[in-house]
Image (cartoon, rainbow, N blue to C red):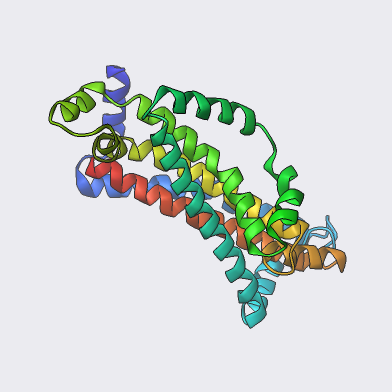
Amino acid sequence: MNRQSSLARSVMPAGPRGMVQWRRLSACKRLLSPIAALLIWELVCRLGWIEPQLLPAPTSITARMVELASAAEFWQHFGITLYRLVVGLVIAVALGVVLGLAAQLSRLGAAVLDALVRLLAPIPKIALYPAFILILGFENTSKIALIVADALFPVLMATWAASRSVDQKLIWSARAAGTSRAACLWKVTLPAIVPTVLAGVRVAGVIACVVVFLAEMIASTDGLGHMLTVAARAYRTLDMFVPLVWICALGLALNSLIGFIQRRVDHSG
C-alpha cells in the first residue's frame, strides 16, 4: 500500500498548479474514447458503409438538433421531461433518506423495511406502470410515481447501509449529552453519511433518466420519449436520435452535478 502511494506521488505533479494540470490531463484522457468513437461513426457513415436511414452520421444528428432547438414545441417536450425527472428524483431522494434513517429508530422498523426491500427491490418497476396509469391517471402523476418507485431503492439502501456503519462512539457521546435518538439521526448520523447517500443519489439519477424516457415512450402525449415514439412510427430515423442524445445529455449533466457536490462534500470533510 505504501509502495503504491509513493508511486502515485512520484507520478502526480506537486503543488496546486500541478494538481490542476493533472486533473485536466485526466479529463482529456477520459474524452479520448468518446471522441474516437464519434469519429469512427462519422467515417463509417460518410463512406456509405451504413445506410443513413439505419444510422445517421453524428454531424447530421447535430444539425437536426440545432434545427429542432429553434422550435418552441421541442422545448415544451424537453421541459416536461425535465420536470418529471426532477420532481420524481427529489421525492425519491427525500423518501429514501427519511426511510433509511427512520429504520435506525427501532428494530421492528428495521425488520419491516428489510422485508420490504427484499420483496420489492427485485421487481421490475416498469411492469407496474399500467397499474400506476389506472390508479393515478395518464398524465404526470403516474410517470413521477414510476420514477420514485425505481429511483427510491438506491438512495434508501445507501442511506440505510451508511447509517448502520456510523461510529457508535459519536452517537453515544451525543446521547450522553442529552440528545434524543431522533435528534441524533439529524445532527450526528445524517452529516456522517452524506457522501455515501450522494453515491446512491448518483445511481438514482441515472435510473430516473432511463425510467422517465421509457414511461414517455410507452404511454404519453408529450416529452422526449414521446418524440422518439412519434419519429419511429413515421420511420424518421434522424429524428429518433435527437431525443436520445438529449436524454443522454440530461443524464450526463445530472451525473456531473451530483459528482461536483460529492467532491465539494469530500473536500469540506
